[in-house]
Length: 230
Ligand SMILES: Cc1cc2nc3c(=O)[nH]c(=O)nc-3n(C[C@H](O)[C@H](O)[C@H](O)COP(=O)(O)O)c2cc1C
Ligand SMILES: Nc1ncnc2c1ncn2[C@@H]1O[C@H](COP(=O)(O)OP(=O)(O)O)[C@@H](O)[C@H]1O
Image 1 (spheres, rainbow, N blue to C red):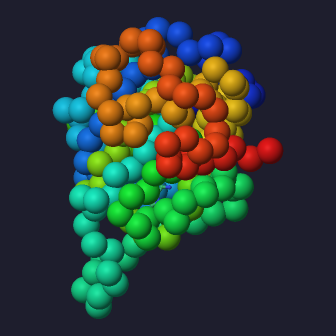
Image 2: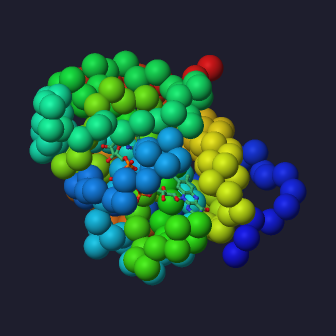
Image 3: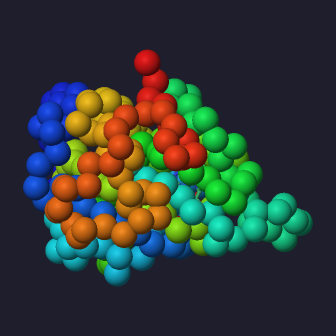
């Protein structure tokens, strides 16, 4: 399906997350096709499709919060034979929320990142397999393949489309990022930053919203969370 003409909604979803959200996923960051940063300038961390729950979740673009447990990340020590780190040239100008942690320089990166993700076949690239591709709204200095990524998905933005050009796809992803930022700034969405799932805990299962965590941005039990931009 090609992208419909016309302006897009600035915010996605109701004022409070509704079923089937929240959906909770966790998995190791694996290699994709390497197009995200090289071709588009928007790196996307892939997790195995087997982690998608429910497995028949409709394809499309979603938003939520995620964290990284970098203890299992592959070392990023630069060597002559090391691959080029990912590039974010198509989003480097975007004002992402400031994270108050040292990020990936430590083994315990406890920041909570606003996130936009694509689940599907990437019709522009005509992939044969579905994939789960997560762009975190943060400018990282290092790649983090192998890290364990925990994600709480809170809303749906749009279906995935085919595009007339790479530039048109990039422009829509940039708009997805803005929509996700605005959508997550709402109080009932911000609250989910504190959910135990994001901090290594187990969940009560997808779609169960009984654990609303401990609230909004700030610090709790030594866990530092990202701050949204004012
Ligand atoms: C927010 C977001 C929206 C996306 N929307 C589409 C889309 O509508 N159509 C599409 O073909 N690919 C879409 N993509 C997927 C990109 O094509 C994909 O991230 C890229 O192919 C990189 O894949 P790789 O990580 O396997 O290299 C989207 C990705 C993101 C992060
Ligand atoms: N903001 C970010 N969001 C997601 N991944 C990022 C980000 N910044 C750097 N990365 C790194 O870039 C990698 C993705 O780059 P990409 O070119 O899409 O390759 P691949 O196709 O292997 O996923 C991620 O696995 C991660 O290690």
